[in-house]
Amino acid sequence: MTRPQIIVAAIAGLLLGATPAIAQKAPCGGDFGAWIDGVRAEARQAGVGARGLSELAGASLDQNVIRRDRAQGVFNQTFVTFSSRMVNGYRLKIGAANLKKYADTFRRAESQFGVPGPAIAAFWGLETDYGAVQGDFDTLDALTTLAHDCRRPELFRPQLIALLKLFDQGVVDSSTRGAWAGEIGQTQILPLDYLRDGIDGDGDGRVDLKKSAADVIMTTAHFLSDLGWRPGEPWLQEVRLTQDLPWHQAARMNRLPIAQWRQWGVEGASSPLPEGPDASLVLPMGRDGPAFLAYPNYDVFLKWNNSFVYSLTASYFATRLGGAPRYDEGHPAPGLDTAQMKALQTKLASKGYDVGDVDGILGTLTREAVRKEQLRLGMPADAWPTQELLARL
Image (cartoon, rainbow, N blue to C red; front, side):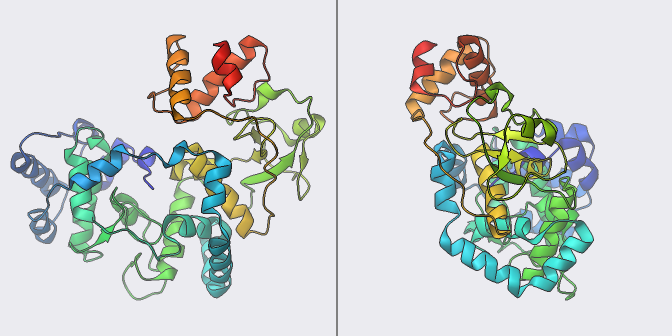
């Protein structure tokens, strides 16, 4: 799973010894040989040594990477469909076994970085089935391809140069394989994050995120801490709702005190609401579907992967590994298929809403536009697009 939203050009420039302007310009496309020469010059300026520069000479373009980049249709699925498939019995069983097997390392990770074991293990399970499926794309070729491609070169060029630095350090080599977007190891860490957050958890003198569970656990905890994890606080909690709730308050950025949610009749589904930080109400499939309160730590899951469906699934998975029961699916109104969602996005865009790409995916921008239109039309504003809404627009 890619996490390009966390790659900030200015930070990349600082990490690589380049200026932010270089990272922002990110030349792309054109003659491959000339482009590689430009990468080589920038890498040398960033401090990449002979080994990394030598490995760059063997890089090539992989059209399979481009095809994967253009065809990320998995997040067209509803939350119930996606989470039911991803948070399955196997992952729960192996996750629980790993939490027990590596209990000392998980305790050390939480003591040092404040991140609890279930949150780490959730990403470990979702990304690679705890290391079993780490990807078979040549990492150098994948990052070269995405950096050369003109869709998001400013994001992937710094990652390519970071990979060359890892080559220099002997942390990985040119035979390294991983995900199509250049992530490496059992929790799919990008090279910049590998450089910044890599922890030698087993004390063998190197950070091996492909084979060492201790390195994976400690590095992932460090990474989540850097994304803003708040120690000792919850991240997600299933709740029960009343039918007269002011539905327009259900927006991720609308965090309110727990006392206010209690006043509106919101209750914890399996445990009391905590006396803790403010929370927002998340209704992935509207007021009649699953319902959760999301606390500030939920933002860390979104920073890992900005997909609403993925981040909510990962956050929910972490609660399950922490002992929470399966959520109540409820009886949500039927949603829209991909063609209908594109039609909805087109209509919303024509009304002046920013819905991002008309891609048929119910993302944050589309949800917010739906909520506003539901308010305008006098419908319960739960941000769940239905055929009724589509017909009324």
